[in-house]
Image 1: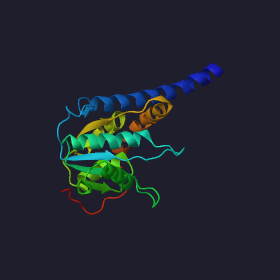
Image 2: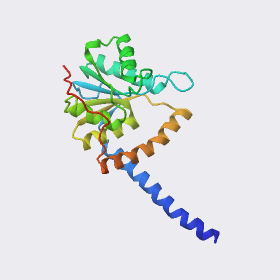
Image 3: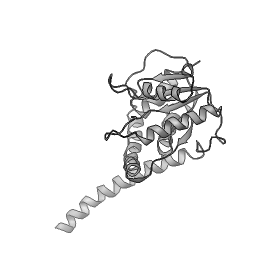
Image 4: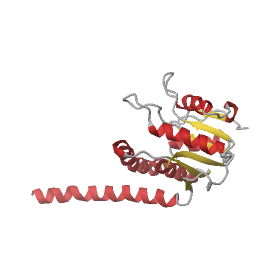
Length: 211
């Protein structure tokens, strides 16, 4: 009886595991030769799209994902690979504002504030990609985040009619990196569910021209 029960449980588990792996492979394959880690080798784009994250961890320490994305953005801008920066992130409350926080740190590092535009409704990667095209009128963009995140963003961009390449910020190793990478497998499954059900951004709003 116990063996039959375990056999019954194992089939759904195997199917779910295969689906998770398939989603991961599709997104990895789709992003091949579209992400760059060397600033010298990446093609130029007018706009770089920084995907927001919190500046600090729950512990109060600075979030390395945040730090590395800011550094990557500055490096790309100063190399002349982008002319404008669109910061897309969560602005859920008056106490939590990813775009404004990133802008402040970019300005501190020498980026002219008139070259920085903010998308306060980038609550999810899907929202950021769709709004870059629909609200900010972009046809092409360089996405700036860690490689695993860029790959997912580029897949969504392609499906939503936005031409995109990715500039890979430095990744994070150790336990924190492992946890984020593990969650990424499930985030990639969510991509296909969102596409299947035609999930829309939480907000659209009036068009904003980047110039």
